[in-house]
Length: 334
Ligand SMILES: [Mn+2]
Image (tube, rainbow, N blue to C red; front, side, top):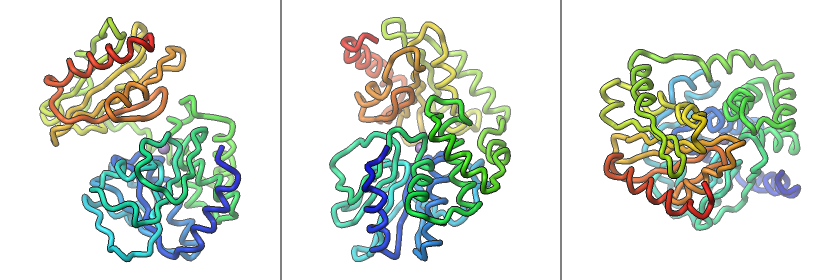
């Protein structure tokens, strides 16, 4: 739940600007994209102009979202020093998560709407609307819209529902709360075709290269007995050999966390840019908080799903990662 005074503060903030720049995290998911698109349209109905900026790329399976073509996909964001726009971070609460190069945050008014724990206190935010109990950023935007009497038309409903459906894994994850389902019910009453969203978000579009890569990565899965971590990895050369991309491996970390002897899983993916991205997963009954592990490496996330990113190559860094987890987590009794 957010502080009851926040919607009014947001209303004041919004009424004092006419121009908005909306950002979300890099590698945006359905919640990130559904939420920014809904917010842009809400602001249009309030006679405010806005632009959405996404770093680098958007997965093709999100192109069904209405308004997606208006998103500006770029690798740099430069803001004119005297720009009077209000910056809004959605589904993330720090500039670092957007992927864009750093700029002087202190000179801007930046607000955040998010459902993840904040990772840094170094960036002063003019307003933080952070609700850790919400399933998704879309659910928070829905609640704000209700509170502030913002117009929610069928298109906004479609985008918000896509956000909730995406972050709850089609109502399968533990964040599927009665509150989230109430929002879903209200949004469906606006005539949203939920099957169309589900078909697009969760369609099985594996191609042979992806299946081969999945097979290889699963075949090399192992259990680290000391820390009971199910582990596998995909090196950059594996991805290139199969013409696969990082998102083709989504869901694999979840699959690994289901290995009965494990208490959590870690999937490492090497990117072409000399970085290693780690996805950590656990399951409710295993009693492990993987966000604590992610924080050891400067990452973050939720109790059951977290991640971090470090420089280097997997074969050179894996021992270090494993040792650090073993050492630090000894006192957590993992
Ligand atoms: Mn989200």
